[in-house]
Length: 301
Image (tube, rainbow, N blue to C red; front, top):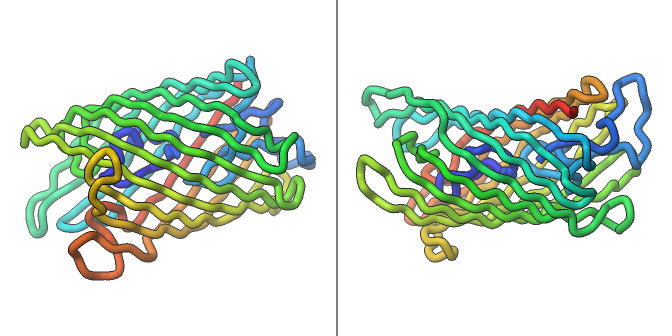
């Protein structure tokens, strides 16, 4: 799950998350466009964009995944960010996976009417742990626990130098509503982070909640179109202590299997409703972005 400033920095690692806050590998991946999918062939992990499916791959078939998220539009002033992460996802059993990785970012930020500055580089290291609690092929729906821990050196909301530590936990549920054709997913996430800004010598404690739902429909073999709806809340304090803002994001998704080993997914979300504590208006552009776009590319070995 890419998460907003109040409960990142670990989401800058861009796993999903969610990050959430996830990747593909069941058998040899989704068939190519020349093949037909059966219910057992589906790998649901990246069908939905920012929302994630419960699948996690099989032992002996690691996957290298590159994920990039663009974020645009916060107040006050100019704000644009590109967060990228590279992860190696290694299933150790049918129900357990580890995925270490590194994250990079680039920012263009500036005060209203002032000069913008561009910064970037290596920003964080992370470890994702994924445990399947219920296999969707054997149960009414799939259910997986996903935990991401990270150590970062950039504040993802401002681009300032910082020391940050974060953990994100998510429950990922999914089900094939029409076997081999229509798949739905629901994610529940909780995140917390401690960040110390070097320039200001200021320590920020934050946490947040996220609930998302998504549908993906196979329009042709190996290609899925869909949409997702996400609701996010941000808080000061590690235990949801003081409410600071909320936002609703809505947008389309695309997943395409390019070969038996290679796939990509694209998602775009726009904030359609929200509010920041103590502020007016119909959006929260203090804690959350106006636009978010995500590209994932994965290769199964």
